[in-house]
Image (tube, rainbow, N blue to C red; front, side, top):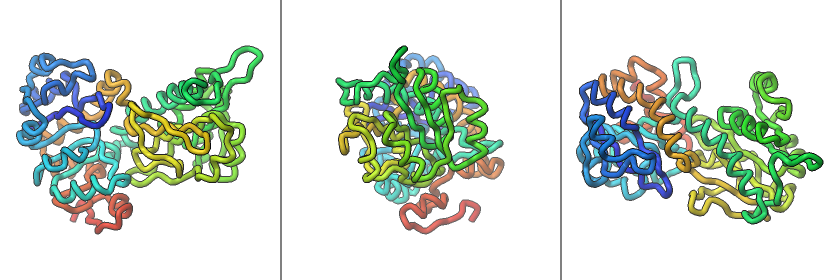
Length: 368
């Protein structure tokens, strides 16, 4: 198979779809790999690194899309890329269709096959291609939240961990999935007073058993969240419904319960966000304020640490990329129902129910 790895053009996206080590494995399996010129620079990889791994370098993004049967990326195509996607071409990347109607319609019109990292299911369940980025985003949510709690950044002026004689900041983590657990662990390690919520009692029991003692669990209801907000300094939104829009768990009215200068970090913004007042931001302009509450809603948080993120992503995606390239996506999906869950579109039809529901489009089960 001919595989193309274009340079990411989304604002401040410095990751790349595959490391040179991953390219080397694909080439060893007999596949041809084209990498766009400077695609790996943001992650610390030169064109020479990819050439040594067996890839060929193409000068432009147009050349890379035109040459490839399968495109391996990090983020979803953005508007300048829509016209480059070919009928029948396979795109293997994060899509988050349920939060972007324009993208959804553009990919349907292209009649490409779209396999979304975020909906591939692992052999033991879970979302193996989302987990590494969720781990990074969860940890970075605290790092960024702590920064914007600083007064010069617009925050209330609190040190997350406090000091002897001064109480630490209070952190509320909404959702105890991979993002939430990593956020809670990071906040606890910095000495914050942490509360994590979820609607699964089994999940909360597990969290209570493994987390440090400064992490408390709370069943997630609107009443309980409202009760926490007046004394909370940093709120992390980390709720995920695979492939679907995130539920709005903190409404605009609820912001009035919070103290001025408090910070909210919406890690679910890729799926539409779980705060009603959220809209996507970038690493260039990461924050805005509503009701004097600082909002951080960067849609590609791990893009700020591309060296770590690119390696972690390749570690997860490479085995799937090899199987798809070796067998073709149809045979690969027949043999792996979890991979088949990642197929969101084929030949101009939506094959993932949550995406069809999000935009009121016809749903076509993949097996049909």
